Amino acid sequence: GAVVSQHPSWVICKSGTSVKIECRSLDFQATTMFWYRQFPKQSLMLMATSNEGSKATYEQGVEKDKFLINHASLTLSTLTVTSAHPEDSSFYICSATRFRTSGYYEQYFGPGTRLTVT
Amino acid sequence: QQQVKQSPQSLIVQKGGIPIINCAYENTAFDYFPWYQQFPGKGPALLIAIRPDVSEKKEGRFTISFNKSAKQFSLHIMDSQPGDSATYFCAASMRAQKLVFGQGTRLTINP
Image (cartoon, rainbow over all chains, first blue to last red; front, side, top):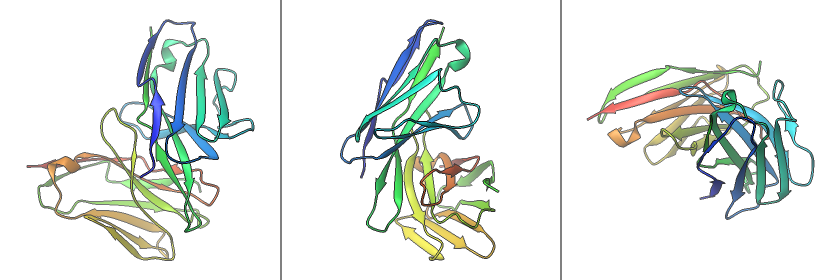
């Protein structure tokens, strides 16, 4: 199967600091990666779509200056939470799409990063 | 139009039973319907997916039934085990890949 990794798996930071989360597709190239946020006992909320070599597309209501996304290569996308505040504490999950011979894209998720802002 | 409605919100089944989770959608442009399994503190894992030109797909103990005219699809888990206890999400997308998720079903399989 397709493997997607995230680093770090959990991070605690102080309010006002920035945190970078990495998402890597380990055994396939992903032209598109997605970043999600998930609150306890809730569904996944799409934050942004990240395409290699181009600017990310943010969902309505997501602050692009706060959540900086960079997709530098076909296997790496990063999410930087700038000037983090306690309300940014959440579970952040990335996913990467893999094109299949059926003509469809399958989306594989990373293990998630638990961010706690104190 | 973009929503996927999932039910039930939670489900408790005895070991060996067949839990059924249902999803409904409105957008007829959706052409890819995956199911994901998520354990606490982990990312979702792709279980099985179906396209609208197929009415049923089976992989191991997991089966998707798809009703195009009713715009509904469901997940059946055969011979359920306590290890299947997790949250299950249905989703839908068009070829553009962006997934629309259901609200999730918390499944508990009692021993």
